[in-house]
Image (cartoon, rainbow, N blue to C red; front, side, top):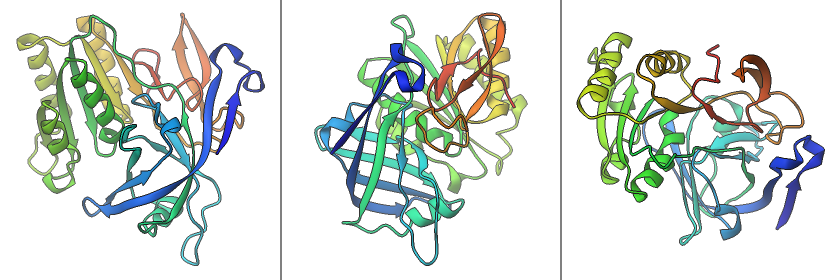
Length: 281
């Protein structure tokens, strides 16, 4: 096992990051629907001291069919230190994810991580509202698990194109999460209806914090609701990455922080940020 401690070289010694580059062993790699696969690997216990919202950089296999050049950043879908298991839910969209689908049980998959800064839950955030669409729910699944272990009340609004494309709803229900499923197919996922549902949750049940991932449309809506109702929140951002460590500057994007616009690295300062800092783009 090779241990890499990233400190002053990244310009932020006060937020030193410890990451591990290790080989993991594939336990299963199966489709969950027409677009998404669930990859489960056996991993050393040391790399499983994870936080929901963090990610790993995966070294995808090279074959005659696929030749990915860079590692692929992948949000953690689940981790279990006792069973020494790590899982990723991914959408098959290009060279890297296409290459991942070829991994069979027993294959070796090198990973680098855990990377980035994940979600946090303040002590007075007892009623959490998760809002996400598609694969964004992968990042929020471990948050829901952690929140329920902490005794927090969680509602998850899960959106997708169709019932067949909905992800994680059964898993959320098993955790004791209140699930509200919306789809384009049945005409319930439009912005106006989604906003009405969120406002109903605020009025009838109360919401202490919003959590979301990826979608700029959802981010903008939740920011507007946050300003109106005074509700805090966090967002995990999706961004193209290369190194995943903060050195290449590939994932830099603008944020509002302390009254000014600043440029931050999604992989290093994030991928989870304060809801109101992120700028939809």
